[in-house]
Length: 556
Image (cartoon, rainbow, N blue to C red; front, side, top):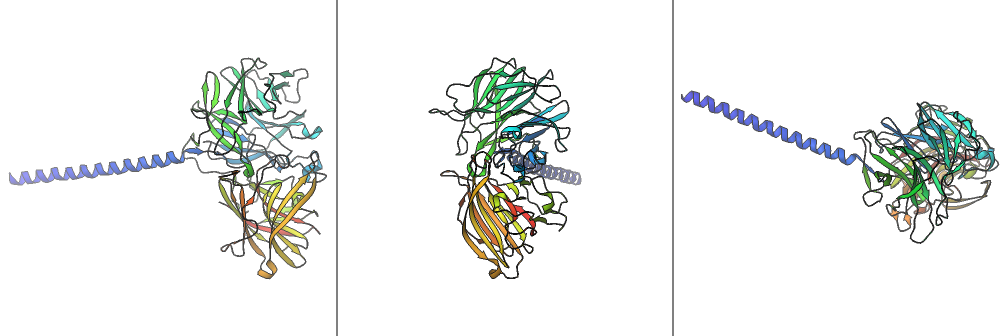
C-alpha cells in the first residue's frame, strides 16, 4: 500500500511538472509571437513622405496585387521611370518608357538645353492587357507634341504608338465602352481614335470653368471612374487671403458633364506648405489611398500617402481631420526592403535602373566592360563647364538625411580635364578634380547656372572656389580619391534645412571636410525645376580623350 501510494504520488508530481513546463513553453512562444507581430506591425507602416526624394507629378495604377508609379524626370535620360511596389512602402525602379528623346540637338546639350523641359506629368493606364503611357514635353512647337507609348510588360520594351498635338498635364482615360479620351489643361477634353493614332477632330469639350479666385491654372489632370461616376482630380492654385494650394475633384455621371466640384484635400504637412497634385488608387481589399506630392525645397517634390474615404460619393483624402497623416499602415507586411536610390559597385554588365544621365548620353563615352567592376567615364568633346558636360550620371538625393560617396581613379585624366562628385542642380555644390599640366587639384566650389528663358541655353556659369587642395603636393603618388557628400533635408527655420557638406579621403577611412559649411541647396522652378541630385561627372575643357574610373557609389 505504501509503495503504491509512493508511486502514485511520484506519477502525479511528474505530470504536474510536465504541465508547468509545457505552460511556460506556450507562454514564451506566445510572448515571442506577440513581439514578432508587434515588430512586424511597426515595420508595416508607410512613413510620410512615402518617397522622400524628387518624384513629382505622380500617376499610380494597380494591376492585380502590384502598384505601378510613374513620375516626371524632364531632362534626365532614360525618362519616365516606372516604379513598382506591392505594399506602397517598398518601391523599385523596373524600367523607363523611353531611353532618349531625339527631336532636337538640345537633348544632346547642343544648341541649347532642355533643363526644366522634356517629359512632364506622364499619365499611366492599363487597358485590355496592355500598359499605356502618355506625356507631352513642356516645349514649344513640334518638340512639345504628345507621345503615347505602350507595353505588355512595364519592365520591358515600350513601343511608340503615336505623336499628336500638345496636351498640358494630361490624363489618358479608357472608358468602359472602349472609347478613349485625353483630359488636359484646365478642364478640356478630346476623344482619341480607337487606335490612338490621333484625336477625333471636332471632339473638343470644355468640361467646366474655373472659379473666379482660381487665378492660377488647374493642372495635373487625373481621371478615374468609380461606381459609374467620372472623377477628375486636379491641383488648384488659389491666390486669395486664407486660401491655399489644394486638391480638387470634379465629378459627373456623364463624361461630358455637367460636373460638380469639391475640395478633397487642403493640408500642410511636416512643417512644409500645402500639398496637392496626384491621384487615388484602390487596393485588392477595396481600400483607397491618395498619392500627392509636396514641394520641399532643395530635395525637390516628395510623395505622400493618405487614406481616401468615400464620403457622400466624394474621395476625401487625409485622416479624420482632413490632414495628411505621419504614417499609414502598409498593405502587406513582410515585403522585402526596396529602394529607388541604390548603392552600386558597377560589377553588372548593365547600368542599374536607379541611374539617369543628364540629357542624352554619348554611349561611346562610358563603359562598364573596359575595366570590369568600374564605371569608366570618357571625355568626347570639349565643353566650358559642368552644365554642358555630357555623360553626367545622377541619382536623387533623399531625406531626411543621406550620405553618398564615390571612389575615383583619376590616373588617366588629361590636361584641362575636370572630374568629380556634386550636389547637382541649377545651383550646385561640387567636388572637382582639375588637371592642370601634371598637377591635380581638388576644389570645393559653388556653381550657379543662368539660362535663357526660351532656348534654355546656358548663358553664364558663376563659379566660386571656396577651398582647394593640391593632391600632387598632399599625396604625390596617389591616383585614387574618395569623395563624399552629406545631405540634410530635415525641416528647419526656412522650410527644409537643405544643407550639403563635402568631404574627401585618401584611404576611405579618415575624412577631411572641405569648403562650404552647410551649403544651401535650392529648388528653382524657373531653371531646372528639379530636386538636388548626386552627380558623377568627367569632362574636358582643352582636349578630349581622358577618362576616370569610378570604383563604387555607396549611399546611406
